[in-house]
Each structure stands twice: as structure tokens, then as C-alpha cells.
Amino acid sequence: MRKRAEPVALEHERLAVSGSPSAGSAASALDADCRLKQNLCLAGPGQAEPRCASDAGMKRALGRRKGLCFRLRKILLCVLGLYVAIPFLIKLCPGIQAKLIFLNFVRVPYFIDLKKPQDQGLNHTCNYYLHPEEGVTIGVWHTVPAIWWKNAQGKDQIWYEDALASSRPIILYLHGNAGTRGGDHRVELYKVLSSLGYHVVTFDYRGWGDSVGTPSERGMTYDALHVFDWIKARSGDNPVYIWGHSLGTGVATNLVRRLCERETPPDALILESPFTNIREEAKSHPFSVIYRYFPGFDWFFLDPITSSGIQFANDENVKHISCSLLILHAEDDPVVPFQLGRKLYSIAAPSRSFRDFKVQFIPFHSDLGYRHKYIYKSPELPRILREFLGKSEPAA
Image (cartoon, rainbow, N blue to C red; front, top):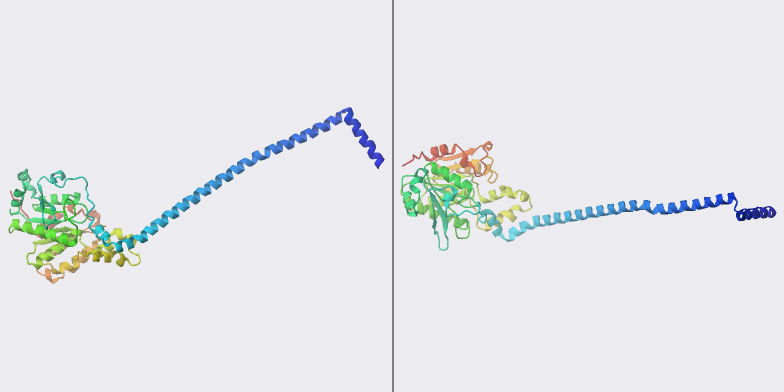
């Protein structure tokens, strides 16, 4: 075997030395094989790069998602913390709840000059100021019947005060929370009542509009009493009606109850969108929806109202009122639920104090869209007032 292997090896050596064609073929094949391996080696990293790039992109996308989820969780925890903290804050600071009830810091519409009612289309209205108590000033608007608008041009406060003694009925209007005596829907009601032949006297409670003082239920009631007495001192025997709207109904029943107790009742009381008492109204208000089923709702939200001295107990007041009562309420009222007005009527109607007086409840169907403050738009309102209060014939 060794002898056979040696000649073969010698033969291969000779072929390699002699440079025969077969040797060249073998060498070229070997070179091709080496180039193929090099190409494969070079091609390998190039194919891996896209795969690495896609992996990096996926990692970045996952990172962004995790960051977004973290931020959302953080926001959710903050909202939840605020939701839980608010009841405790209100309980510890009852004054916050009082501000939310009065909303006297909300002045709508903005940028109007309350000294110039003519800017709101009331060109037969005079603005003046009264002083119920030391350190308290309240702004008053007096609108005379529309048929006198020509005579009223350029007249001063004395002329307007003397006009109260004419044979025309007078409505003392007590507005609700937020805004001022120059609120749009309030101005529109003044125009309607003026067109029907009434004097309309309205004012901003202390702390509202340009009136000076600190809001409170007692203060609001005293302001209303002062304006009523001011009117009666100038109106003689002319009828004086009191009209309260929303929170103003609480002021109105407080006022009328006090007037009846001193035996100087008004000629009639009109309540527009009234509630029973402030606790029931606060519990029914749309703002309370998110907390209505919160554990301890009454303790957290309603008790601070009472501790602040705010009651506006219409349901209790009507038991001590002895004058005609008219209640107006829209079925689609989103602020003071219709059922509270209906409930107040059911309390007042059988009361002994009303046995010699009219008590009437006028609902306005939800299809009319009068909601909380647009009953003045009703074409039936003149007829309703005429039938309830008596017809007011225009005077020259």
C-alpha cells in the first residue's frame, strides 16, 4: 500500500510543477469557492441589519405605549384624588359651599355699565342706590310702565320716585343667584312686565353686581325688606307684588313671611321656578350628580350649608304667609327640578294661612323649552297675570 501511495503523490507533484490544465482547473475551483465564502460572509451582516432595525422600532413603540399608560394612570390618580379631596375640603371650609350657592362672583353679562340701563334697551329706567345698613349699598333699577317711555326721557331720580305714586301696580323683582340685575333674561322680563303696565323695581343684593357688602341669607332678606319699605313709602295705596325667581324665591318667602308677621303683607307673591328648601335643591342640582351617591353626601355637602346659616326654607315659610300665591314652573327646568315646585304647591295649598287667598300652580310643558329662565317668552304669561292679579289698564 505504501508503494502505491508514493507514486501517486509523486505524480501529483509533477503535475503541479508542470502546470498542466487539470492543475489550473483545480486552482480556479478553489478560488471560486473562496470568493463564494467571502460573499456569503459579506452578505450575512447586510441581511441582519433590517431585522435589528425592526426590533429597535418595536422597542421604541412599546416604550411610547408604556409612557402613555403611565401618564394616563397618573392623570387618573390625580382626578380620583381630587374627587375624594373635594368633599373634605368643603366640609372643612363651609364658606366654599356658600359661594357655590350664591355665585355672586359670576357677573354675566360682562362689561356692562349697571349705571346705564338704557344700554340694555331699558330707555325708561332709572338707576339709583339705597343704603339698607351702614357700610352696605345696593344698586336699584326702576322701570316705569312702557306707555310712559317718552315722558321718562331725561328725567331724574325724583321724577321716577314720584311716579310710584301713580295709579299703577308695582312689582318688586328678586333675582336668583349669579349674574346681576342686568342679566339678559331678567331684562327681557322687565320689558314684558313694563309693557303690561307695571312698574318694575329690581336690585342687586349686597355683594352682587355693583352693590357693596357681604352676601348672606339674612343680608339678602334685609335688603329686600328695605327696598319694599322704600317702595311703600312712595307708592301710597297702589298694589305691590313680589316676584322671586330661583334662589330669589327663597328671599321672597323670607320677606313675605316677615311682612305677614308684622301685618303688612304684599298684595300677592309670585314664585318662578321655586324649590322647597336649599338642602333639597342642592341635592337635586345637576352639579351634585357626581357626588349624589358619595358615602356621607349629606354630612359632606348639605350640613355645611346649614352650618353657614343658609336655609331658604320655602316649604316652612309658606305655612306662615297670608296673601295670594302664584307658582310658575317649567317641566324641563334643569336647575330646579319641576317636582320641587309641585311639592311646594302641595304644601302651600292646604295651609290654613291661605284659606282666604288664591293659591295657583301654572306648569309649562317641556315641549315649550322654557327651562329655568325663559318663562317670560310665554305668550300666555300676560293672560295668566291678568287673571291672577287683575287687569292693568294703561294710563296716559
